[in-house]
Length: 244
Image (cartoon, rainbow, N blue to C red):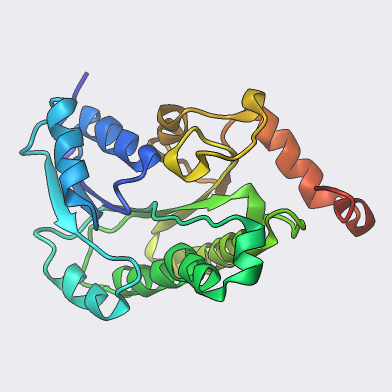
């Protein structure tokens, strides 16, 4: 049942499959959503196709890697958010990343640098008395360095550490910070990859964990991925080195 919460959610990188499901679920809970992405056309189509209330969803242009535009983007928001979700992400195969630094740099920019740029601006605005939560979408790839995906994983590891420090920075203002540490999802970013089908999560399932984020800093959706997360955290380095 919809309830008018009077609260606003800003979703950065709102064109991802998970982010789109967040738009749907937040509006169903009565939130207004500022959906920000470079691909505003795709977002407009999503809102129309799913018959979402256009009065509840505002579509904004946002480029995660255009750092110089971030302050202006934030200053011109129609309303300052209660909740911010950073969902922008970019993935390049590890072999390609090792041979093409431009692609590696793009991952760094989208997954980490862009996040730090815009979230610093949002977090340091002490005039926004509404801000109550910042949620970042990270990855199990960033838990331990593994030879199959350590370039991408390093960008997510950096993002997780940034969020952990940001949580401490904002604790005195009672602003919560959450890191969603996510495994395989059936999304555009994973198309063409050889993945274990039994471990793949659906975007709407992951979105539910984002929309219902609680007080814990780290959330790992799906019990199978929780087990993998724990194993990766405690596994001796010699055994990690034998993983693919």
